[in-house]
Length: 335
Image (tube, rainbow, N blue to C red):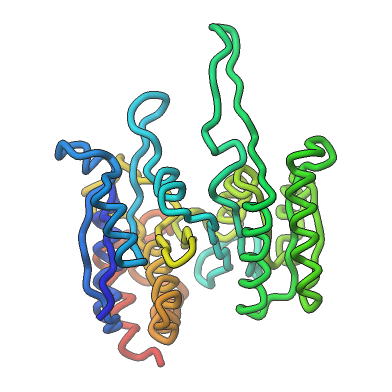
């Protein structure tokens, strides 16, 4: 048995995390859960939004399955997600985006992965006010972080049998910061002659993803562009509710649904657990339980393609529990 930290999260978090846990149990995943509170749910209990206790649990276990956590706008505690990435050195955000039969979109053959640098860029949080008339943020790009994320992208591409890495940038304007990111990516690319390397300016990238998303494979992005691009790509295949995510560092990884906590539907048992279940399947692969992860994915895809027991966001009327049971039922027949 492998001990894994479990953060139920806020809003719909406990519902979709609960569904994912049921599916993992049905797949006989060798997991023992260590439950931890983070986000608003922790604050309401008089705890920090992200405590040292939670961080220590993740460091010790090396793997965490996390539900969405709420971040107050303007005031209040800082983003739990950002804090986790910085405190645990989760430098790579991994977002696979794949077309799913049964979910109607304008595209049918999308299968790409967004690899986003997670620790710096404008998200480093280096900002200050200039009197009462302006505010200034620093865009921090380092050679170390840029080279590290580039190597992660190429290693991932090679391991997964992918053929191309596309670096996304705005070096035509930000010649020093984005220019450094590209310099590092080019140096790393030279060590992977078996993988095609190309560069696309961020604004053109957005247009190309709308016009011809099928031609992209692995997208290598600095933090800000990766954040924007990953949500754009999710929209191409049905939205954030059907896309998994992971934040990976050296020897530690946090797997989570990439959507928000949706407090407006919390407790109503109507939330779509697809993204959470797919994230759990990704987690199993990371843990060396690839076959079990693939079985879960196949069962989930079969349930979605059948169109039975779909949640309201997918055009159905089923509850979270009913959809979960539909996936578990198919696990019994999936090889």
